[in-house]
Image 1: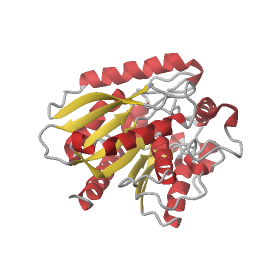
Image 2: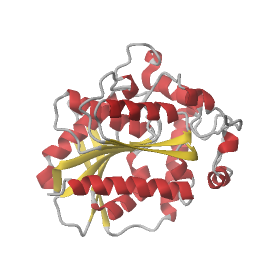
Image 3: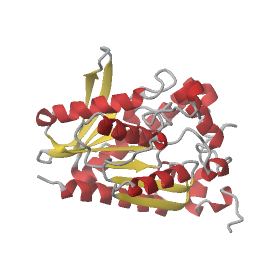
Image 4: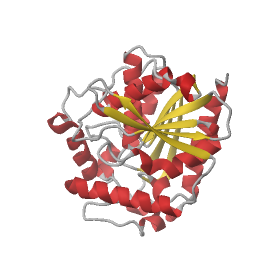
Length: 327
């Protein structure tokens, strides 16, 4: 039995990186001051992006897709300038616990992915809670998926190689979108790649009780986020799977799935459980569990060995899946 607490089990490289992360009394993300934290996330992302040399071989274009109510869903298209089409496309959902963040925050990461994998990325600026409670974000995901497939020829993409991906809260939205696509009878995505996804509003797993004092999306932060996403529905019996994918009782018919989970993350056990249930439902699953890693470790310590191992596994999965269905 491991007698060390979560903080003592952090990978040494990740522990060193954690020392430099600004913390409030509520951790990195103070959801009691949502607007202030949103502004802080944007400022941090912009500062990081300013330090990274631009990638001239990736073209970035913004498009607006019209929702049924007449409002618009912004999508950022990132594509390699020198690759011949039709190209595979990754429909991407940014992190932020479904209450923080914006699509452009991931441009540096996604530009690197575009170059290394050789695909188009469509990054969705989905609606955030509490202004737009769940399942609004998944509805945006379904709209974006339908739009990509419908515009495949004009966009130079392969409609048979459209996949879903996201990290943290965005991983949960990708999973919810996959369920919605299946249940609406749409053509299935090629795969879904979920990085430490946020799947379960109930906060009853062992890991959700274990991770309380690391400071990066601990239990209290997660409970606050779900309360913003679902309001008084959080934790009740009738939450639909499009709001919290772990609530789905039927996981059959979903696309092949990549799941990356962190040992020291509130989401660890819900991620492991989802992978096991997908496998039991006949879905091919590639699962990675990273020891000593806290939530979003790859973003806070991108040069750490455990981060490079994750990126290697993730990119490898994307390349294999896209290549297997190459026209």
